[in-house]
Image (cartoon, rainbow over all chains, first blue to last red; front, side, top):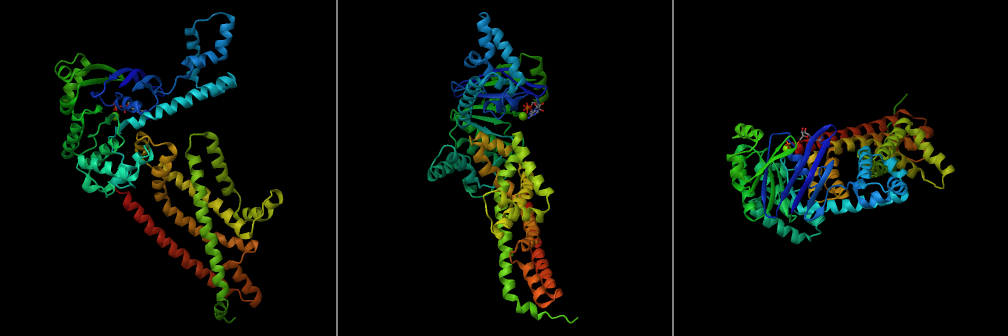
Length: 303
Length: 221
Ligand SMILES: Nc1ncnc2c1ncn2[C@@H]1O[C@H](COP(=O)(O)OP(=O)(O)O)[C@@H](O)[C@H]1O
Ligand SMILES: [Mg+2]
């Protein structure tokens, strides 16, 4: 369902993700754990393109969603002057061209792009545009739950729920309301449908936020530390909701510091350290016999 | 010199219709300015450099040129070089609106910048496109924080609209001038006008304070 291949992400000179490979099957529940700053959020946010990867590929349901690497696109390379010139001179190896093009890519110099000629430039634009259209539709199928809930404060709970289904999925209002009410009921928030988020407790907000993500009928839900901003007494009500969702067979990627919970619900635990996934194992194995020193040290600290 | 305030009463009908002109100009300018300010503030926050330049150039024009000069330019100057023609009301309203837009867009930009990144991310993660996100999620929240400065803008517009008297529109100031030229009395009419403006502006300021308090209250989490 999700395939992350060789994902790199830099923020300036900071290398946050350094070649992450991750495969998620339908119905799998995977917890990503690791020290703070190791790139867990960045990995999660890359999957619905809230961050644009620097390099690498992300496939969601057989569709490539990562921003295109236009210079590595064969069509683009063929249309480029450099390629044509080299082909005319001698049958140059495509690998060399790629290297040249990668250097240009890193320059991100649009003046250079124009120099390649209008035909080339138009093709490049077209491929990028098509690609983005393809890529951004992924967000409809990938739900996300944030640490800080991010409910819309100027909308009531119900309006929060029906906004995107109506706007994006073009659902009729009565249908959207009906569905929203059913979801609110399932997270025990139906009684609060007409209040504004500011009047809710953290746990209540997060339950609404989960229901809001589900209202879009996602195929997978990403959770980024859904309980980290909550007072301790509210953690359980949110974890219960997540657990019930897990039991429905929803595919989930969960970044969490709740080790007990991760162990209980996950099919696999992925341990991320300094931008590298250094362990990927079933919870029993990971928690009892972690392979790496880093994971052992981490577990010693948090357990 | 004997003061005689009865002349104010005698000219009351003229004051009445002039008051309408003043208020009409002010309200139209404000609404139009608010409308203009939205694309302007979107330019200011956009990542596209040329749009930013255009927006800040626009703002600097209205900061740099005296308002009266702008009014004369719009009413007398522009129609001579462009195929447009304005009534005094249109020219005045347009200039004031464009000025307000420059001012309001500044505070709107502040309001937009103050919105938590999480709001953008939540909207995007739900699959909402940029335009919808701005219209339904970001701007409604930003405008709330712009409300107090809208009241300030209303106040300064109210005072600035006296400039339209100079292109012949009969606003309150103009009525005062008429009284002066007919009756050779200046203190009474201008005193009445001053009191009128003072009361109106104080009332508005009070309203602004109330509004500010309400906005702050609903912001508290
Ligand atoms: N938008 C950004 N700009 C610059 N640095 C960032 C940005 N987002 C995250 N980082 C940095 O990337 C690193 C990893 O961040 P993050 O993925 O949030 O880690 P985690 O979720 O594991 O705590 C941190 O050092 C953080 O400061
Ligand atoms: Mg994080």
